[in-house]
Length: 201
Image (cartoon, rainbow, N blue to C red):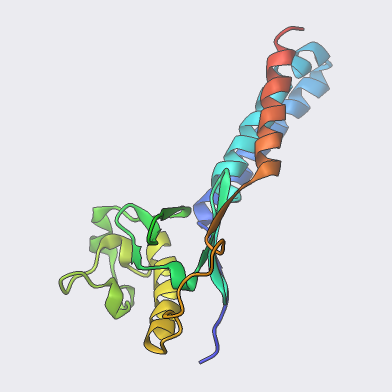
């Protein structure tokens, strides 16, 4: 079966970001409409910073399941995890990829609470064999949860590669890497500086 790339990020985060952006834009428009430019310069940057923080925390993070690696994009850093580096996939608190030396948690795929079990349907527990611990599955492994949907997609391909012996070659040096989300860090840093400067007016 041909591998299908996928991208996972929670719908709640996108909705929340849009709501906060609309509120922030409304407040900025209110300052402009009132002609209060001093208040706009003092408080406007804080509003923009608020929207930017929510965007960084809830809109930007995602898990990308690609043919050669799993990319975990968190608010400030991005992990590139090759398939051969993955030793275990867990969902106790969030989607977590365990490697030999690192544990990579996905901000975009939190686990569901324990009360999720009361809303489960038959299709929610059709998970792979590696998801079952002592014959049972965790709430975070259910397919209706953010962590479970991403973990299931990753596990299916990982198990196929494992069974075909394609993980035996090991990890190439430098293929497991973490990079700083430089643009996000610079943007947030600049907005903090402008917000503080605005207080001097």
